[in-house]
Image 1 (cartoon, rainbow, N blue to C red):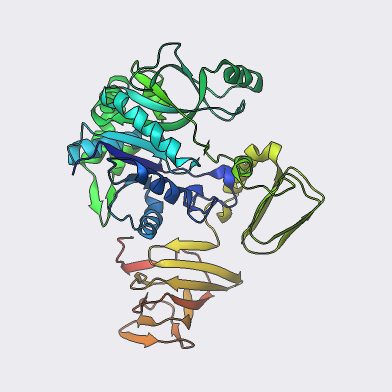
Image 2 (cartoon, rainbow, N blue to C red):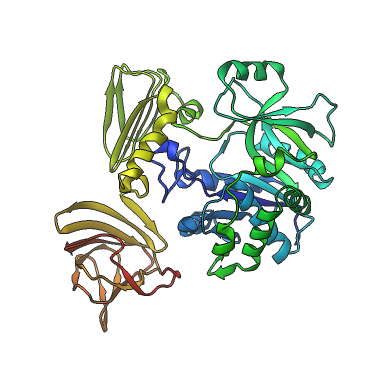
Length: 476
């Protein structure tokens, strides 16, 4: 069945300003920052109330593909197209790839795409749904519709949309006069006072054919490269891989710069739905549930004489005494402390850590794989200890290592172990040894998760010491 609206969820962000919780291999959209679901999952659920809505089309970094697939499965929403970007090229090429995929592969030129970032919060879903419904006639009439968030303060961290002083048209869509860069505080106060400016939330509704026509008008070179990338793309398991060579040549540019600021057919629908882009720890504090002293806490936290702080503990007891206006975030392998005034500068720390090749900018101690996850419990000279979980019915790749041997001890569940030419079963409290250089695989044939302790020993214990011989998930 052809639907009027196809959601396009952009999930390629890195979220460096929410470090140390958000990291490049597990950025903020895949983390449960608010509630029991990730921001990505909340975005997928949010669109389910919209009438005549199709299955979401997801665009993500290829490194995150299994995380996206797993989080969709948790929502029992497996019927999705997941487009993999070989490199990040900002929002314009990503949205263009989605539009060309719908046009070239599915013939849905007359459908509207509802473009949504995966890492935003919308508290009032009814108001959000109402705004989308209000925007649809304008989009079907050939306009590019954006959603302008009604400002509740003079924020300097957002760009603004200026509307024209004209009557409301198309059942609620207002003509847009200009997109404005992030202002200073005094200018932001003037914007909010005028009532003509709205926050630019980066959400859009537009017909596939209209968007591609406008994009080709203003950026034909990028259009050509994206079209080639989609035409030469390849299906890989449940994913669609864009052609790397052509996509890499695309300009790194946002949709605002590429099209919206230049087009004459842009309109806006106001959105007053408790929106936040969660662009900083302070914004998370602002949207959180405060205690009587104005604090927002998560995890095992104990406070005394603390006011207006955001405190997040992931793995241990965290206590604070006699402080205010602080951001304190603890993870398994790092602690970050700053004032709310300086939380936008966290990206500077991340940049310095990257220059020093610190893995804490990319990886968490707990790493997620398509078959499950592992948690590094301890390491030292020539040894490393991991806790490994393999999901029911899943298995690791057939692989071997050139610099390490491994001991496996089953904690719970049942393990089917392949080591060399032998395949055998291990139950709880049983163990085995994988010699250096021997090909091996771990499978969970049971119905409950398999948990085991792995002790590695050897001269080099890096994750790149893996030669995959066979892999059910198509990894090289």
